[in-house]
Image (cartoon, rainbow, N blue to C red; front, side, top):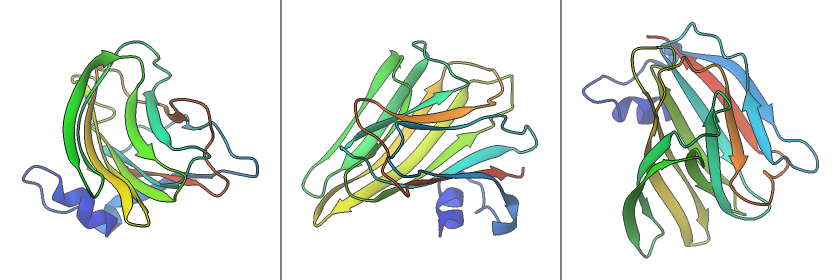
Length: 179
């Protein structure tokens, strides 16, 4: 199913074959939770990256995605989201909070695509689709993000935007997509 989702959002491109994905690393949160997870030393041998997330927070909030450890005001975003009773859209200018996806105290999932992550001739685009169900209330969102930098991405960090932790057993799987 994730392969079809990834391919569907590609502008004019056919769905990506399941054999195009290669597992790079999986991180599972241990006892006591974790405020952040980080993929480092990402190989430069793929066209795109994908992070598949199954997670929950000790307190619901946004997850910030930081690329190459950049904490400067170099991130911008657009979003479309719904809660089951309302929908909204918006965006934000360059800020230091990184790129985001929302999680809750309920288990949720997200698919995060990092496009052309090694191309040093273009700014980096990250898109994600994520959500959770909270017994009829919940959240689903589609976010398009820009990192205002042309550097090849070698690390990716997901962290809470405020206090709290990713719960034990939260899982983050990084895949390389062949081009």
